[in-house]
Length: 82
Image (tube, rainbow, N blue to C red; front, side, top):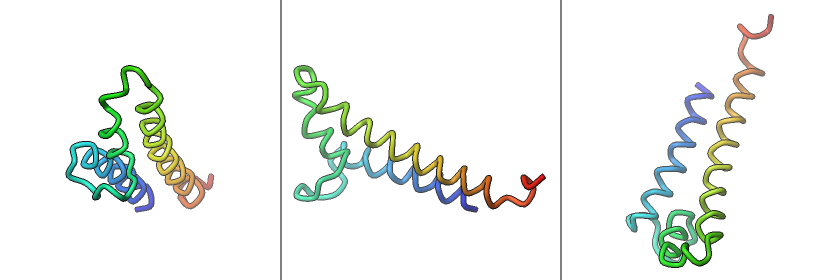
């Protein structure tokens, strides 16, 4: 159940970022990774860090959530106690 919750949280982060990139997400005054990517897509050719920093932040966040879920599963799984 813990692993499923963390995988769902990771996919929720990706879904929110993709909706923000498409312009359907959170409104403009609230900063959000997908919106940041969408606002900067015209300048990414000359300033690539404008796309790399939010993209790396999304990837690191999703991986950290998944690693925490895997660690909790390993620590709490009674079948792995051998």
